[in-house]
Length: 44
Image (tube, rainbow, N blue to C red; front, top):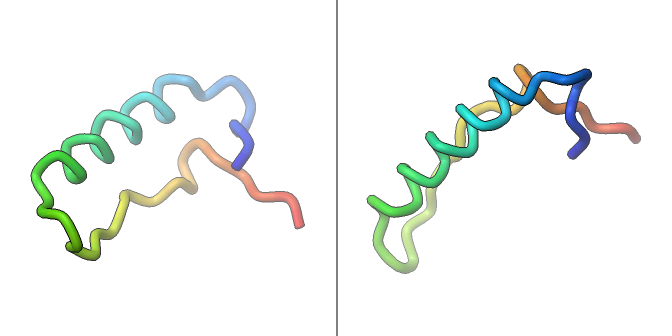
């Protein structure tokens, strides 16, 4: 996953939200992380 432009604010908001979700989960839980379309891009 590459950073789209210089959108560091959106990336760090995503990172913070993701860590919050992970720390509230239990071992073995399947979790859905927030969408990355606001800051990330995939090159195929």
